[in-house]
Image 1 (tube, rainbow, N blue to C red):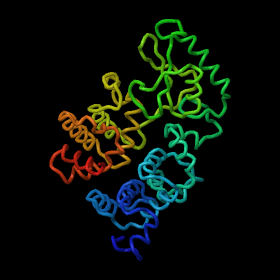
Image 2 (cartoon, rainbow, N blue to C red; image 1 turned 90 degrees about the vertical axis):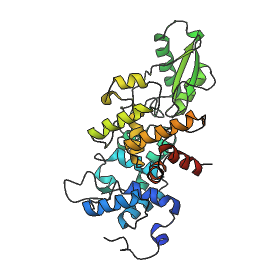
Image 3 (cartoon, rainbow, N blue to C red; image 1 turned 45 degrees about the vertical axis):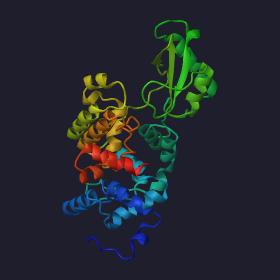
Image 4 (cartoon, helix red, strand yellow; image 1 turned 60 degrees about the vertical axis):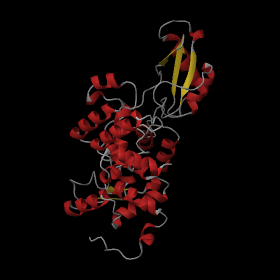
Length: 343
């Protein structure tokens, strides 16, 4: 298959996919070919994409157009494909590579069938939890990370209230507690205004992915969850060696303040935030080395009083960093180049 094998203009092939998104779409699609392309074509395509070339590959463009038309972004589609590798049922597969050794990794889906998953993730549900509920709706049980389908508002409030009464953190006087609900995706200690327990529980029930915090005498602590816990996020398709590399890279600039405790747990004890960050970054084309270079570059700029620079773990903001790093001499120059794209 040559780079010029297709007929028609590039716009004909790509349909409504914007030109500025095509390279990102190809990079994501090239990680999930519909069938094994062979080592020569696969390697050539990967190298061309890494160099910034928008190559003409009919299977990859077909995948990209399908996902784009279904409403996905490259990041969202890449994350979905990382999560479903090796576990997607046949009725949700258009085709698989006919060779048994490749069938679990090389297959094609119709992204339109996965819109319910996309809606749940955009509403704040954890991607892995949303997938579990999407694939097994008959066995799904409600958690704090998903909108409860089998618990009434009254029952939800009763379970939480009774549980909190039985589990004081330090002092037992619950009337002295203040509560705040942390929005999905926020890390660190909460910054929102405190509210009453009924108000907090209603927000917790209706905002998938949110967390309840409480404090007494000015000190916040995470409230335990009495409802069934969501299955822990895993490392997805990352092999053991790559997990180790990502674990070491993220430990340089972790997405939470629990870095010391997280390091003590080793790669198998890495927090869900670390695992999901590695998977998101990997889906965007980052390597562990890229992330370490990004953390170094951001650190250099912040040392120069550029405190408004986004954190490295805001990985979607830094999607252009690997390409900029390859074209510049130092990590901080690559960081400045990405920031220049976002005035």
